Length: 149
Image (cartoon, rainbow, N blue to C red; front, top):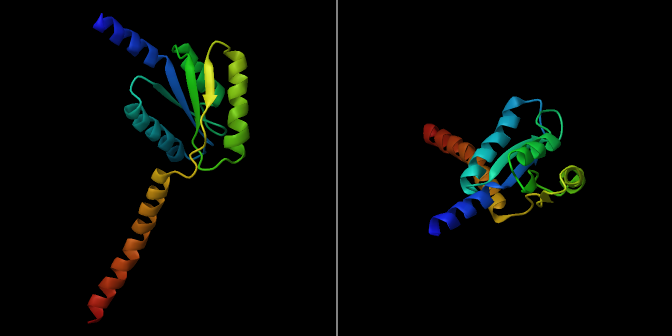
């Protein structure tokens, strides 16, 4: 009985998916960065299918990513706008694409998560980057003071 419950739980988890959506870029490195975030997210959400999509410029686009998740068996999809603020893409474009996907896949529950917004983890990351950018300048000043003595 215990093994059967584990199998049912595993099957239910594999029917869930998340589609990370960013703007898309002509720069391949920018698009690869979203793929790296997806790889890290897969480790945080075991059993979830994690896909990426771009609003423009680069494939895959949102409808194709959602369709691929549905074809792989997803019955619940969270569309995650990978944007800092609730601008036009996060508040209008992504939800509109999700509504269109719901119409194409009526048996699938498709929801849109909030944009990243003001979150302690993001604030901590910004502070870390600011400190990192400030360090070389302080180190350079210290080195010039040491040389002038």
